[in-house]
Length: 232
Image (cartoon, rainbow, N blue to C red; front, side, top):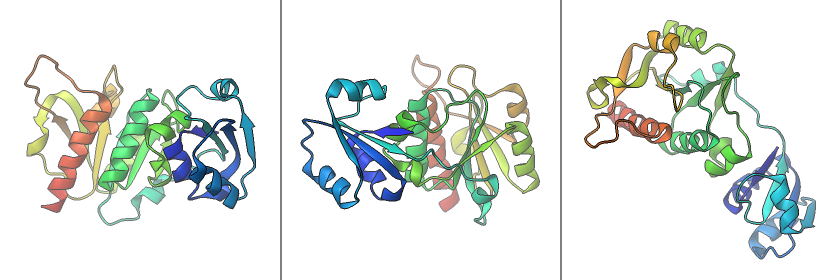
């Protein structure tokens, strides 16, 4: 897998054993990054910008790292704390949304993210760059069946909070205890079966002419409300 960008490179170099090779633009001037690569004894290929452009679809800032494929956690690894706060993504497709949600989860101290194996963006270079490298700090599990997973979590004592435009004001809900926040697909929202397995539907009241928010923004708002509720 290729990851790219200076911030991601700095973060990834905290785990140099995962880096297979570095591709660096010939005119690259970040001496700190170059020294870190050399200190870690990473093989460096110096290439023209056009060759780097062909390797990735995004702003690489003159540096691309080839790393091991992302290692997903198991569902059990997300349940090690007494009262976990988990985020479930119901078929999120935009890697920028996924990366932004990962970054929010890391900042808020969320215990894990769950995504489905089908019809969902996976951890790739764009996701890593958008998350500013925080994919290494958040546990992400992939499951074959979201509905079955939610049902299993409910058996473990979790409360499931879905998100939709028609529901209960998100600020009036109690997120203490074992909590799952479900974020729906960018266009379709939550699937019918996922929604049917939610205990509560959280809604962010809109005051303007826009009736919905970007998926990552809405998820961030509810995550931090949950964190506030859990500290109270």
